[in-house]
Amino acid sequence: MAYPPMVNAPHRSSLWWLGLSLLTLVLDQLTKFWASQVLTYQEPYSIIPFLNFTLVHNTGAAFSFLAEAGGWQRYFLTALAVIVSLIMVVWLSRLSANQKWLAATIALILGGALGNLIDRVLYGYVIDFIDIYYQAWHFPAFNIADSAITVGAVMLLIDALWLNRTQQAPFSS
Image (cartoon, rainbow, N blue to C red):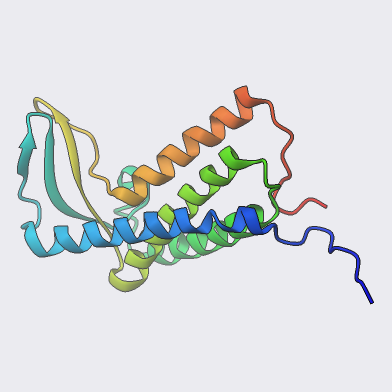
């Protein structure tokens, strides 16, 4: 007896994009491990005139937002990362095979969220080490996961504003 296809069943082609999430996660964790082993905490190591590698521990969110909040932010940001990651997996599984741009977008955000989630669970902070600066001004230190989340967010914005696609929201029918 043949069964009808499930409505909203995961599309195998979109689940392949989890490989990009895994690649992002592995690169993030390897570079953070390297930074933790090689760099001295808060001592800049000059790479080129506008780039240092400087090991820092970020107990807050992006750009150290909530870093001085007293500790509760660890649990809040951990829960938020878990919820966002689950939504990303469900959304990714519901994309059609032709939504490659959106799938890559979601995969990058997912990989980055998981990379920072691992740090937060294991250490209570996120390991950052990429330090871009100009003269005395320094952009807040970041990592590969932050970069993937940022690139994914920009891609999502481009998709929403200019690519004019019909998309299925994470939990729509």
